[in-house]
Image 1 (cartoon, one colour):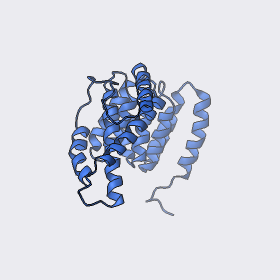
Image 2: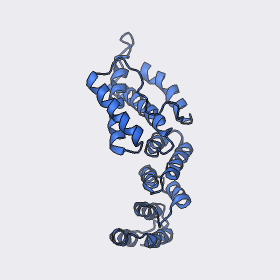
Image 3: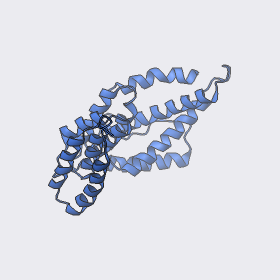
Image 4: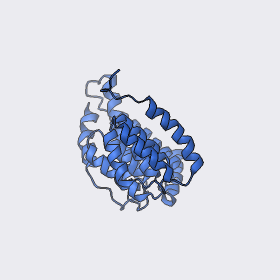
Length: 237
C-alpha cells in the first residue's frame, strides 16, 4: 500500500504533463540493472533514435523497463509495514511498471517524427484523462502520412469501447486515397459499434478511393458481411 500511495501523485502528474524532446532516447541511470539488460536496453534505444516508430524495438524496450520497475517496487516495499494482500501488491507493481513505460514513451514522443510512442501515451492515459488521450492520438495521426498511427489510434479507442471518439478522430484525419486501408476498416467497424449503420456504409464506399484495389476488395467483402449482420438494438425483431 505504501508503494501504491507514493506512485499515484507521480502517475497523475505525468499523465497531465506535456511531452518534451529534451531527453529523447536517453537511458535513465539505474543501480539495479543487470549488465545484459543494460546492453540490450542501449541497443534498443539506439534503434529508436534512428526510427522512433520501430514497434518491435519499442515494445521490447518497454517490456524491459516494465520488468525493472516492477522489481524495484517490490524491493522498495517497507518490511516494517504490515504486508498488503496479493491484489494490492500486484496493483502497486503494475502502477510502477505503467509509470516507467509512460516515462519511456514520453521521452521518445519528443522526436518530431515519433508517433508510435504517442499511441502508448494515449493508451496509458485513457482511463484518467480521456480528452488528453484523444489529443495524443490525434497528434500521432498528424505525424504519420501513411495512416498507420491513425489506424492504431482508432484500434485503441475501439478497444476502450469509445467508438464515437474513434469516429471523431477518423473523420478529422482520414485521407482515404493516401492512408492504409486499415483506417477505413476501423472506421466502418467503429460506426457499427456506435450503431450508425448508414455512416458505416459511407466509410465503406470511401475505401474505393484507395489505389490498392486487391486489398480493398478483400477488406470490403468482410466489412459488407459485418454491415449486413448488424442489427440496431432499436430495430424490430
